[in-house]
Image (cartoon, rainbow, N blue to C red):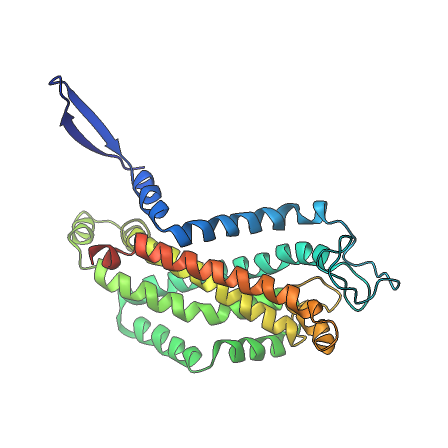
Length: 299
């Protein structure tokens, strides 16, 4: 980690050397983003729940209880039960792991592929740039969810195919973002110096140019996770994602829609979980943009 040093003189005339690190500076600025700061704690809590949820769930999320069907929230079932008498709170705990895993994997896969394509496109230019960007334009021509539905329809339903579909429609966005940053960074003096010293193209792209795009990438990843959660839940709602018996938030919405008029809690509870999670990631993304985006900081 790079550490910058500032030399000050105290009242006694003794020279004191202070050390500042990027991590400390980020933490200092991040604490000023009050809303995003608390939203990040909510996300951290959600990740912890996703890890330990199956071990703290009060009931088996798969086991039906026909004596407790469609019961409202109570002391025994704090989020109520579904049409099979299964505890909704336990299913939400299990579903947190599934929903977060699908969204994280799909976003990170899309980010990796899109980043590599964006670096190649921006750095080499020419026919490679035109090929990658025109392919991205073709994918941009389709609405994200429509493209995901088409891909899952071709590959078949299932969580793994949902991950592939959501990652594919995220690739062009990452490619265009990284391409723009690469076009700007490759004209910098330190890149020209690396070229004059005989550095390879791979070394220049991944060691000199890529670090310049990390701030924008982190911000965009945090925002895309919310979009991925919505997309994965939508596919499960349409029956193209998780198996209906799986405690996935989107599948829970799909099963509960028939009881919206009589037992609204069946739909309300997973709906609130999706809403709060997506909102938290979007708020964190806005906060990270304010802290990490150099254009925002300069303003």
